[in-house]
Length: 176
Image (cartoon, rainbow, N blue to C red; front, side):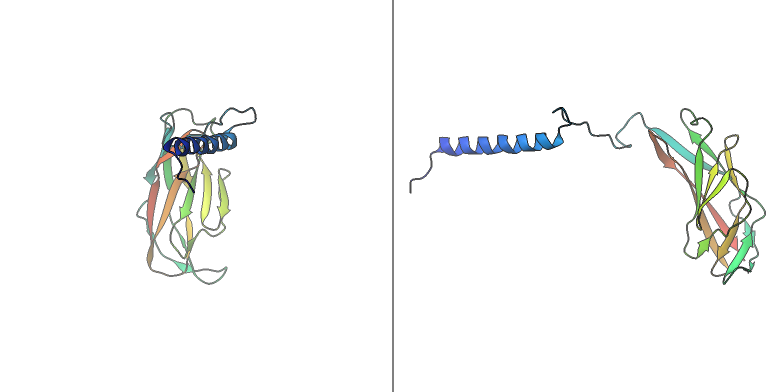
């Protein structure tokens, strides 16, 4: 068998490269043969608006726990509600801005309790609260597996299009 010339090898490689490129471009093309634009990641988009959640009141509280009447564990009612404000560039999305309060520690949850119209229970560890006058307020009762302890409630914004979470708030609550 004769060795292939350099020209034949170069031509074969060029044809194979063009075929691979054409196949890739066909899969990336939209319905009319125009390559589809990739949506930028929020961090790549210079126009994305940062949303910050800032703690106003309620951090560092301490309260006594009592045996839970609904099952095993303890319940603790804190006197002061957790209050945050949201610092966001641009409009507040027609007053529909919301934040989520999440009990971050294992063995910590929010028991069902009476809350205002602006508060929705997402699951046993999370409440979603609508901002009123630029603030979100959550009267808090914790259900815990053990006492004493320090439990963390994280607050993050619910993001809309073109927004990115820049910072959240964190509350430390002490159960005695």
